[in-house]
Amino acid sequence: MSDKTDITLIINGQSYAIRVESRRTLADAIREDCGQTGTHIGCEHGVCGACTVLVNGEPVRSCLMFAQQADGKQIRTVEGLADGDEMHPMQRAFMENHGLQCGFCTPGFLMLAVGVLEREPDISDHDLVDVLSSNLCRCTGYQNIIKAVRAAAVEMRQS
Amino acid sequence: MKPAPFTRHVPRTVDEVVSALAEFAPLDGRILAGGQSLVPIMAFRMARPAHLIDINEVEGLDRLAVDGDYLSIGARVRHGAFHKPVIDGPLGKLLAFVVSHIAHYPIRMRGTFCGSLAHADPASEWCLVAATLDAQLVVKSVRGERIVPVTDFLEGIMSTSLAEDEFLAEARLPLLPDDTKFGFYEFSRRAGDFAMSAALVTYRLVDGVIADAHVGIGGAEDRARRITEAEDVLNGQAPSPELFVAAGEAAANAIEPLEDIQTTAEYRCDLVRAVTRRALERSLQ
Image 1 (cartoon, rainbow over the protein chains, first blue to last red):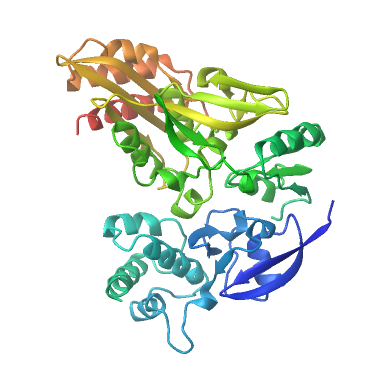
Image 2 (spheres, each protein chain N blue to C red):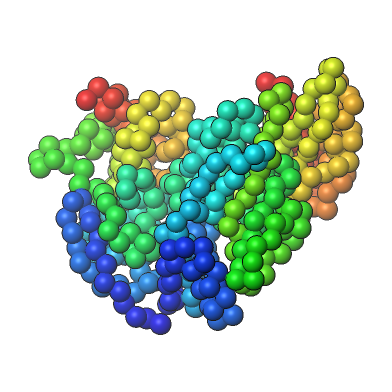
């Protein structure tokens, strides 16, 4: 019953050949088996959104997906946002707008916002607030996160 | 907070799904679709199935198309598919309006329409849509296929008439006439949280009076259903604020309210009164 299966996770373009139990969540596999600890695990039952990653371009809760289900799929995590020393516009906007304090929820918010804006570049400010209600932050009170994402959205639309 | 061990099966065809179900359902096996309800309860160890039959790789189940007079929604069609109207006319708009109330964006990327029906949470928006619009459900097993009206499918809290070896392969929603008006209103304490009551109404205006009214209530009873008492109030009458209040009153009087630690029966009835009236008001906006 605890038989392991060989799978390949493609995280930020790099392949990781790993061997996991069927019950291994994608979040745990990314962190524990692939060593990519930028993805954070908060509630482990799909409420907080800290573990949000992109799977084939879609933002998903990686604690509610099994690693075996992501076999061969394109996964993007917070480690893949920056281009070398050049931060992603979303990362820079969070810094400039004080969109974080402790930073625990930030990787999830970054991947959520980047994922949605890449899929729907012209999303309205109102709908963007609704999207950001997906994830929990206990430091900022959300206003600076909303400011940051709106600023980055303008920049991402121009580029 | 980690799911208990299980064996994962990955069928590629519907035939393989029903074969796997026939073999493993008696051994505590069940279907894994989007997993947005099942995986959390597995993390809590409230569910610890020994086998999961993962239908995410099954060909054909992602079909979303109009067949004659209904919209066919395959078992792999995710909530997010409805973010933009999937068809012209009122049904596409209705589904796009309702879907924004289901959980949150990343959940909608994974969770499925049919999975919501099979899970049968009383607060499910899709159960309310299916009940209000008189959906037909296509259920499959090695024994064959049967088509079940939604009233015979939803049986109670997280309870359906699916047999152990059956799975919900497709939901069929009747297309709505172009002049159909609809309104949806949901009350929950937080955005994306479970509805404490929700109402969906559809009707047509013929010579200024309401015809073919459907009033569905979800989140208030053990299952979503149409409330004929409220429909009777509406049919044959011209829309008015007083009429909408009367329909809300009829709905509140007709339900057998669920009670929980936060919600007395009286409060739930009051919510039903309000969401019914507000859904009707939205139908005119």
